[in-house]
Length: 192
Image (tube, rainbow, N blue to C red):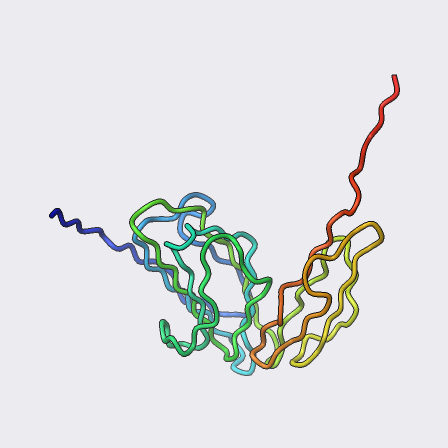
């Protein structure tokens, strides 16, 4: 039986607030195989927490993962907030402490484009502003624990997802913001 050795590529960095952007290696091109990358984000103000949102995200589904955790103990299963793979991600992820870590682990086969992340410091006991859906209307402007936001769509659009979301005690919204899709097909008629 043949045995193969693969070189593990390490990457990542220590980042500090109040905000910034970082990407996976080679983004927007294919990230490296056998990568082990760790980013640790620390709020300058110890009384704040870290909020991240993804501008782009695409990992080889089921094989390459981005684990996101709270605090400075990278890899501690008790501090894991999310394990992401594929192309679906939450709107926002918020830490409960002034530190957050992200661990990218890729296998030896095909990769994808990776990700681009924005981070910033926000007040404790806050979920951050999740935004308003395109063609949507949001009722409520509080982002603190137990605050509720309600959504509806403009005329001619249908709401897909939750009509309301709650900022939970773990600083995460109870669901992603909904989307508004057009209910009618638009036809153009040309007269000659």
